[in-house]
Image 1 (tube, rainbow, N blue to C red):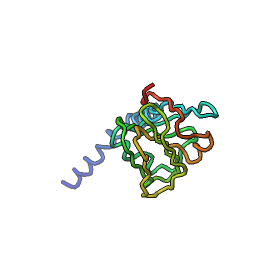
Image 2: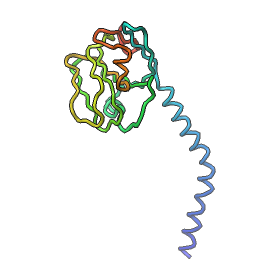
Image 3: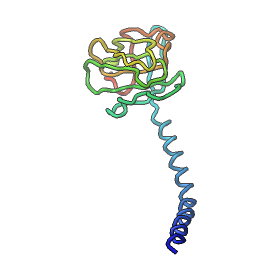
Image 4: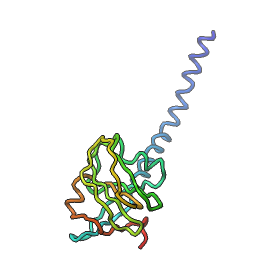
Length: 162
């Protein structure tokens, strides 16, 4: 008799799951929509003009430590902005990062201080800011060269003082 009771209890969960299934799907859709809403406009001004990107903001330690790890691709007009909230030496790496990236080190005023182009995927080699930096922007490898990005170019985003 105890065995029969366990079977009845196990199958009693199915109606509850069926009732909650649409709610679960809705929650997952909302999470996906929130991820898209998390993209913010960032503009890079070079000699060739203004170049607009959509970036994810990584301004918490947990977000910065994960960065773009484990992603297999990223649209050409997207990237990630690592906001450290203070200026100082910054060290990055490409561990568990499958996408080759350009890393752009930026001052508190929104000026490019260094460009580390075409970083090597999956590498644990340290990529240094070579001086103080307030933030790092990661874009697909080759973008910095394509837009003619160089030291002193301007970044426009709410994270930087105007």
